Image 1: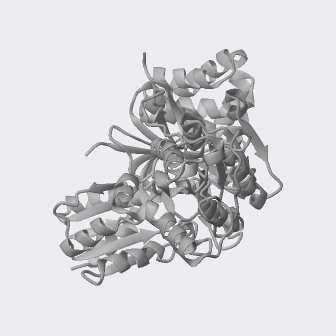
Image 2: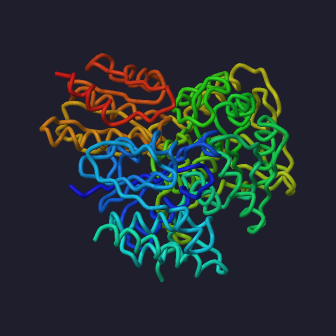
Length: 182
Length: 379
C-alpha cells in the first residue's frame, strides 16, 4: 500500500498555520503531483484560541481525510501543544517553538525545538512570517516534499512585494532544522 | 496545454462547477458551513454576465431562484440544514410548478441551529421528504472536492432535463477540506439546457405532455406567456380540481424521475470490492471515505468487506442494494445521523440480511476504527 504521511500544524488562531498547511498541500499536490488533503479546525476556537491544520499526503488517492496517527506535529504555543500534540506515532516527530512551549508533551517520539517566532522577528525582521519559518522547518524535518517544491509553493502564494521576505523565511526555517539534525 | 489545476475547498469546487454548468443566478443567504459557495459566486457570477443577490432570508432566496429560473436562467442557492428547512414550502412549489433549480446543502449538526461548525449527514431524509405532498426527489451526495465539481454540473443537468429542484448534499468535512481539482475543459463534461418550446406562443402550454413526461419550458420575458401556480393545474398551467387531471399530473411528476429509463439516467454508484464481499458497508459523503479506509484495513486481515457508495442518493438504488443484500452476511450503514439511510436500506433488503446502523452525531467525523470494530462483530 502507498505510504500515507500525516502532518499537523498547530498554534494560536491567526498565526497563519492554516495557510502553512495549505501551502504544504499545494507543494505536494500541485507541484509534485502527489495526492494531498488539507483540513483545519473550524469554529469559534479558530480565532485566538488553539488552531490546527492537518495535511495528509500520499502517492495514492486519500480516503479518510482526517489524521489517524500523526507522523509530524508542529506546536507554536503551549495551548496548542497541550491540545494537539497527541496521536503522534511511535518514532514520529514533534517540533516546538521553544519560547512558547515550556511544558513539553511526552511520548514515544522525537522532539525538536527552536525559538521559531523569535527567529522570524530577529533574523527576518518580521514576526508575521513565523508560519513560513515553521513551514520550512517542517519540510526539512519530514522531507515530505522537496525543499524546492516547498519554496515554489510559498512563492506562488504570497504577494509580489513579499516574495524575498518569505523566501528568506522559508529557507531560514529549513536550514535551522537541518542544523538541529546534524 | 496542461489543464488548470488548483487546491480548492469543496465549497469553492461547488461554485466553480456551477459556473461550468452555466449558472447565471445565485440568490442566497449566508450560512455556515456553506458560505464559501456564495462567496466565490458573488465574485465570479458578475464576470460572466450573471447576477448574485444576497436576499433578506432563506425563504426569499428560494423564491428568487424560482423566479430567475422561470426567466430561462440556470439558478442555484447554497445553504445548510436550517436554511433548507425554511425553503421547504418553496421547494414543493418548484416540484409542482416544475421549475429547474439547484439547491446545495452543506450539512451540519441539527435539528434547528444545532451545531453550526460541526459536520452532519442528518438532512438526507429531509432531501427526500422535507416538503409536504407526494413528489419525486433527486439528491446527489459527492464525497470529494473533484466530485463536488462534477456532481454540481450533473445537478444542473438533471434539474434542466427533468424540470425540477435537485439537491446536492455534502457534509462540512468535504465542504471545507482542500483537495486538488483538475478543471475540465469546456465541452469535456456534458452540459444540458432545458428543452424550449417548439410551438408558436399562442399554442404553448407549460405542461403539455404530448411532448413527453417533461414538457418544454418557455422563458418569462419572451413572447411566450403562461400561468404558474402552486395549485394542481391542467396542461395550460391554470388551476384545476378535476380528478383525472390531478391524478395524472401527480403521477407523471413522480414517474418522470422514477421510471426505469430515468432511473438508469439519474442513478450513480461506486462499488469497491463488492464482488466477493461478505460484509457490505453502505456509506456516502465523507463517511464513505472512512468506510473505504476500513475496507482496506479489513482486507489486510482477510475479512471480505466491500463498499457500496451511492453518488445519487435519491432516487434510491433499490435494485442493486436489494441484490447485494442477498449476497452478504450483513450490511453496515455508518452515517453522521442516527440511522436515516439505514431505514431505507432495511426497507429494500426486506430482511434478507441484517442491517446494522452506526450513528454518530457528536460533531466528530465517523472514523474508520468505528466501522472496523462493527464489521468484526459480524459473523
